[in-house]
Image 1 (spheres, rainbow, N blue to C red):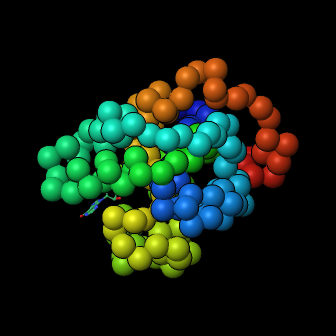
Image 2 (cartoon, rainbow, N blue to C red):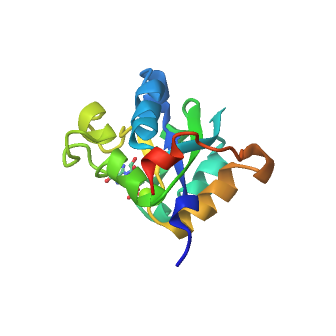
Length: 154
Ligand code: IDP
Ligand code: MG
């Protein structure tokens, strides 16, 4: 079985979350859950990069608006690590549409509209690895011991 404690996910606070001063709130939720922050940077995204990140959605009617939105201000790009990091990241973020996202999730608590839903989190281990490579160079990803790890998983 793969070592799921080494699982990593790509999480990004979108321009609306950055502009609304919600970086700290989002980070706190991931820290409090027990995931480990291993990389983080603010990025002014280019249209080319945004199109690559959202490649799967190219045919959607909202694609052009999505690219315009993601490039409209800085995003906070992060890599979080821990057991089941991908699944836990999706749980913390909540459903895509904030009108359907459970209270207690980022989108359920802090967002109101599907096109301004504050945060991105990878939807599978494979896409997480792809997105981490798209956003970060290997040397930008740190390796450090989370002192509380023994209290978070066996
Ligand atoms: P996800 O972010 O929950 O993984 P995806 O289906 O991958 O959801 O869509 C990526 C992003 O595209 C969403 O977070 C949202 O910002 C935007 N989006 C998805 N569906 C719609 C829509 O119907 N209208 C406008 N924007 C949308
Ligand atoms: Mg997605």
